[in-house]
Amino acid sequence: AKRSELTGILRRNDDASAIASREAIEIAYGPANPYGRIPEIPTVSAVTLNDLKDWHQRTVVGANLIVGVIGDFNIADMEAKLRAGFSSIPQGTQMPAPKIDFAEPKPGIYFANKDDVDQSNVYMVGLGTEERNPDFYALSVMNEVFSGGFGSRVVQQVRTKLGLAYDVGGSFGAAYDHPGLFAVGLGTKSSSTDAATKATLDEVRKLRTEPPSDAELRKAKDDLLNSFIFNYDSPEKVLGQQITLAVYGYPPDFLERYRAGIERVTAADVSRVALKYVQPEKLAIVVVGNQSEIEPPLNQIGPVTPLDISIPGAPPQPSGMQ
Image (tube, rainbow, N blue to C red):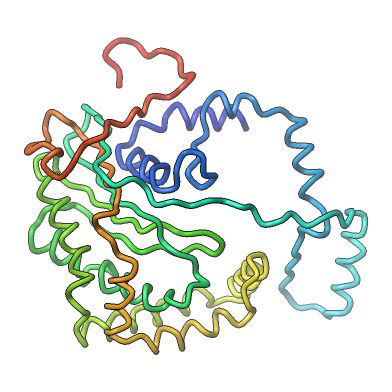
């Protein structure tokens, strides 16, 4: 397992898009935050079998387990079998929710040079929200208007009309127990890095100034509601989601509230949450590309901070290799 993990670390700079995504996540959450932490050769190498055994002893206890079963059975019989099967596991103590501090990333341009590519990968990131946020539904509709498929604003403007990006998209992300990421990503030719980044930022700003039209709002809500059912179109998916809700302390009818929550969203709601949560000037912009081909240079957008993507502890590579 360690050998496999170490191999992945050694190959992690092969793909420019993966570099941009990884660095964006670390910058958004911070290197000391567990959600931004990156495995390294020394930290993976230091793990011992006893470390895993100790972790197992602390965590695999009855107080930390939720068991779900689906199928054709008698409920009382199945419960008795499960209780008997798990009876040897000590009850133990439930692990408390971790106390983690979150802070917005430092705005600016962060650049990693990769001179064996002819395109740039760009990520704009900031902190998002949690799904328990009452504004979750309005933010979901805002996301759909902004980047919900080929008919969305950012795709139509940056990719279709201006032809500046191979792909572009993003969302104001929400997680169950911590802030997700507000992330917008795009891939573009080296020579159009500046123009594509500026055009995408313009679309982010327009979320604050241009309310969705009636057609945009209707399409966004319809698309969300029509696709939602496919997340729970089998008993296995429903059970898995119910267990997830239980793990994170959400009410069991949380999914049932989704349709009503989306249906209630108005254009005014979308404008309100865009003004409240979308802050383009606070975004960190991560660019991975070939510096010699990016013209005009990135410092025309803002101050540039070089990123060190070298791999600590990696063996030296032969001369001439990236």
